[in-house]
Amino acid sequence: MPSTRRPTYRGGSNASGTGARPPGGAGTDVISAAKNAEDTAGGNAQNPRNPQGTSGKEPGNVLSFPEPKGKRRRRIVLSTIGIVAVLMAGIVAAAVYSPVLALRTVTVEGTKMLNPDQVQAALAPLQGKPLPQISEEEVTALLKPLVQVKDVTVKALPPATLQVHVTERIPVALVKQGKTFQLVDVDGVQLSTTADAATVSLPVIDGGSGTLPKDLFQAITAVLGALPADVLARLSNASAASADAVELKLVDGQTIVWGNAGEKELKARVLSALLKVPADPKNPVKVYDVSVPRHPVTR
Image 1: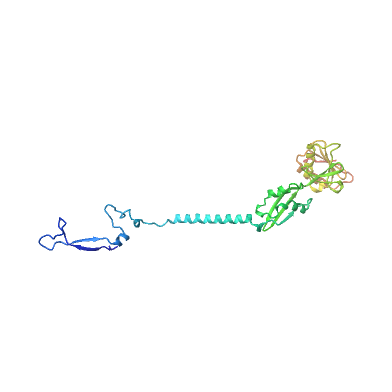
Image 2 (image 1 turned 135 degrees about the horizontal axis):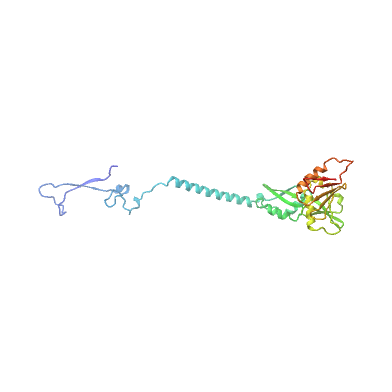
């Protein structure tokens, strides 16, 4: 780049620096160069003591380099992620606490013994609560007093409906208590009571003259819980002399020798198949023995 320095001229001086011309002539003119303001601002001439041409004292001499593309890209990505995270947090907070999603309707499915109104009444404390804040554990805890409920699943249907699917306990027998009969499931949970056993197509657990021991009761209910509904409906009563000697009675008087509660699913399938065999009037079956399910016996 061409220099902007302008040469100036002055007369030669002697060694003493007095400015007098040397004898014998006009003297020798000396050409010198001087920096102007533009040189100082626009660029630094190299100095033997500072080969890089920077004085280190003037801020105008500091060079500025552009930010690397990779670093700028990372900064933009991180900034974008931060903004998105803040927006998502705001959206989630608005959804969780928004009154727009407040519960107003509860629908109930899967009830047979229970009335849907009973379930809705038990869940009344949830009314007005935002759907995202309602958990399945909370619903289960509110329905715990309803002994007929074995399990429950919930589904939120925005903006204001909660769908509740109830899995009820399955009654397997009647237990006589005085003049009433208790309807119980396989775990022995009392589901309801009735004064007339004939109104329920379930076997009556016979405890004899005393209270049935817990181990015998569990053995009987485990067997009854394995039977299909059509077989269960044909039973009149169930008893057990021991946990290995469970017996069932059909309504027509036939006896089923079950044995222990082992392999109860296989025994149930074998018994169901035997009961479907057409009866032979000449050789009526009085006993179905499935205590050894792979070798059943009828007599």
